[in-house]
Each structure stands twice: as C-alpha cells, then as structure tokens.
Image 1 (cartoon, helix red, strand yellow):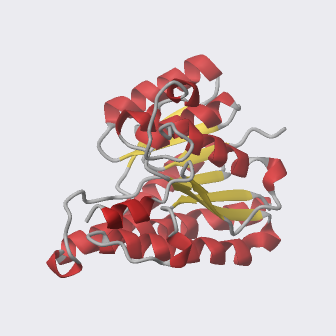
Image 2: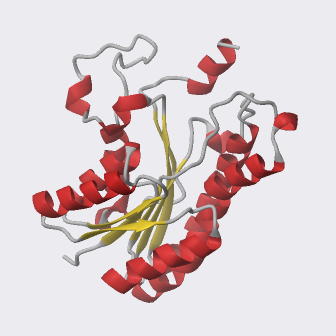
Image 3: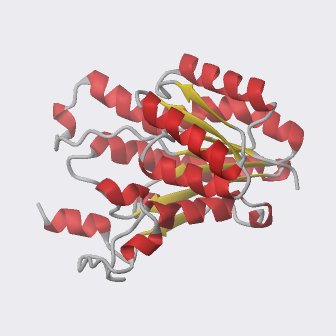
Length: 258
C-alpha cells in the first residue's frame, strides 16, 4: 500500500490532535497545521514520529489568509511530494453570544474566511495534484443538522459559513468523483473541553444524561469516522454529511436553553 500524507488544519490540539494520533497509528504521514500552538504541534510531531515511525511535520499558518494557505501547501508538498488527505478541522469560533447586527465586519470576515473560504483556498491549491494522482480525500467538519441550513441564534456567522460549507462539500463530491476524489463532512455533537483529546475508552465509565447514549463524546469518536472516510475502501462514500452526536439534538438543546 502506498503511504499517504494527511494535512490536518488546527491539528495541534483538540479534535485535530486526536485525528493526527488516529491517522498516524494507521501509518499515514501527518502535516500538522497550527496558528499559535507551536509547542503543542512540535511535541505532537515528535510523539507521532517516535511511536508510529511515520514522517510528520509542523507548518504554521492562519487558514483565514490565502497567502498562508499557499505556504502551508507549498511546505507540505516540498516535504512529501503530495497531499492525499485534507482534514479541514480548524474552524474559528467566537464564544461570545452576539446577534448578527452586533458583529463587527472584521469578526464576520474572520469567521466566514476560517470556516468556509479556507476550504476553497486549500482545495483550490491541492485538488489539481489530487486529480493528477486520481486519488484524494477531503473531509470537512460541520455541526449537527448543518445540511438543513438551520438558524442558530447568536451564532449567525459560524452557522452561515458551515451551512455554506455543507453545500460546498457536496459540490466537490459531485465535481471530483470522476477524479477519484471523495468529499464528506463529519458533524460532531457536544464534545467539549478535555474530551476533545480523549479516547473512547476513557468515556465508558463517565455519565452524561444529556446524551441519549449516556456518555460524553470524545475526540476519538470523531477521529474514527474521519479515519474510515480516508481509507481506500471508502471510495463509494462521497457527498455525505455524517452526524456523530450520540443521538443528542444539539441545536434543540440550545434553543431550549435560551
């Protein structure tokens, strides 16, 4: 089997870190993109190399900027000759609850660029080489019910960008199917705090009554789905929006809490 290389945006911490661990354990080389978490990125790359014997590099860059995306891709291809898998994990988010009319233009642009335009930037740069190799995996990250373009109070920019990204993901799936490239979206439920980096086994004795399955979600719950979509054998799955929520109605809970 050919050794693949994956670019994970926001790969130094959280679900991105857990995904890097998952893919490296399966023999995939990792390009860890980070914006500010240099120490965490370097420590992760060293860990992956020592434990899984894969080749791993860190590349700093702000995905909201096209010039940074150019550099991320350039450094990755220079090191590995090709980028086979892209996990668009990084997704800027503003925790403050704000109505749309209260966003500044800079805040709006930052959220839309990071959650939607960045996927265009990186896809625009990487898809041509995927076409040449007739193989590629594009995996985006959404939120529960994103495919129905729901309203999300106090999260207008994030919700609008991710809803647009769901459509873009499906469009890429249609346009690039003939080139051996798949595009799918994974939608995490309420996976918060330290649980983003934890393994499933760590959650089995924990209780979360707000989740129908009874336990908290973990980063590994997401990374296992990402790993499945990245495999050679998953070529028939494309244009899919896959919720990983433990059965929880995440937006319904949000509306009830208002």
